[in-house]
Amino acid sequence: MIKAIETKYNGYLFRSRTEAKWAYFFDEIGVEYQYENEGYQLSNGDWYLPDFYLPKQDLFVEIKGAEPSQKELDKCTYLADGLNKV
Image: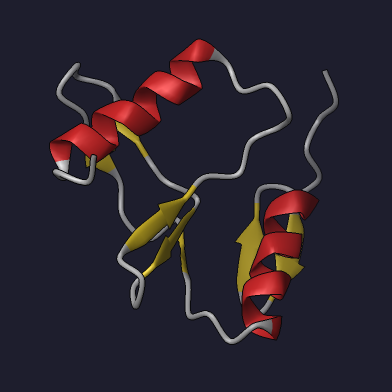
């Protein structure tokens, strides 16, 4: 497994270069974002901190590799269910 490289961009310290590249993309297309703005306790008891929240779209964006684990996918599902976004 390749270790992520923390990257500073636009006043944030992103956990990976990939996250920073997405922030740059959002800036380039004029999409407002909040990075790791708020954590949520899921109905299964786990805590989840989504990577991005796009307030104008009321949308979460999670940055994962090509093959996210089942646990990562489950967390997204629990968050969507808990916020009635399914």
